[in-house]
Image 1 (cartoon, rainbow, N blue to C red):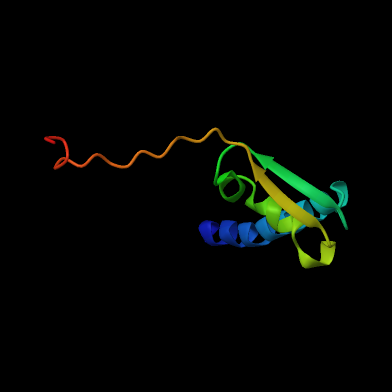
Image 2 (cartoon, one colour):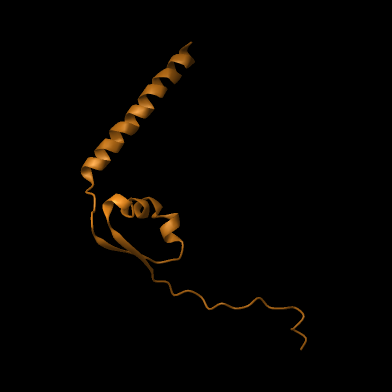
Length: 89
């Protein structure tokens, strides 16, 4: 019975904390509207791996933002894989 009551309390507390946190975050952080935004990243895929929530929030249609992503990476020159058959020539 004690486990069941603990689960019931968690079922009420966790959603309540989520709603509270979401309301505090939306009140503290300003919403950018009708802005030209350039997200500067260092490596390809950084926007997907680390900044996806930010990009999604900035590009919502109701914000009217114009977002560009600029990747500044030194990169590596592509070298084709060595072919073991060409080594003897």
